[in-house]
Length: 158
Image 1 (tube, rainbow, N blue to C red):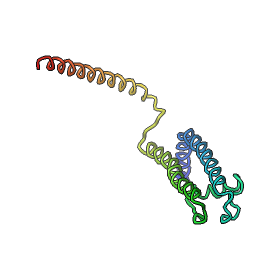
Image 2 (image 1 turned 180 degrees about the vertical axis):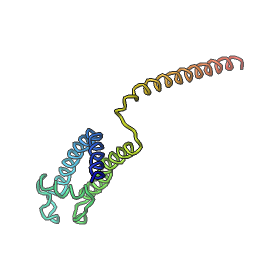
Image 3 (image 1 turned 135 degrees about the vertical axis):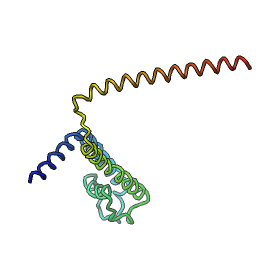
Image 4 (image 1 turned 30 degrees about the vertical axis):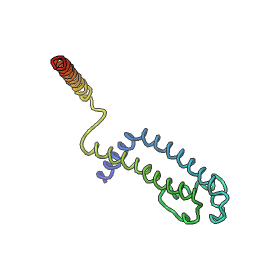
């Protein structure tokens, strides 16, 4: 029983960590859904072969969601523009619904590897890393400047 409670606690930590990204993904998903439903309504509203499934935007939202989820139940009855939009829906749906999977996978991986964004000692380490990064950038800049002057000097000797 304790093991299940620990796992639920970890899952809750993961959801809390990626919540802003999930909310943004949900918002963009709703916009995409309405956009594609409107496009399907526009192209298929006068198509008698689809049986009135796209006679209104709210009516087309149901079948558009099915297509976003990967289900193509009446794709052979679409008009040519409807088939193009339906293909785009399938591609975008596959790409879009993989975003939350990646978010969860990355969050669980960082949890499993022991990385924590709220580490108190992390601030000091970041400051040291920034200083060493600045030092490296200064050295690289100086080396590039020296190389440039060497090329200019060599060009004058030609």
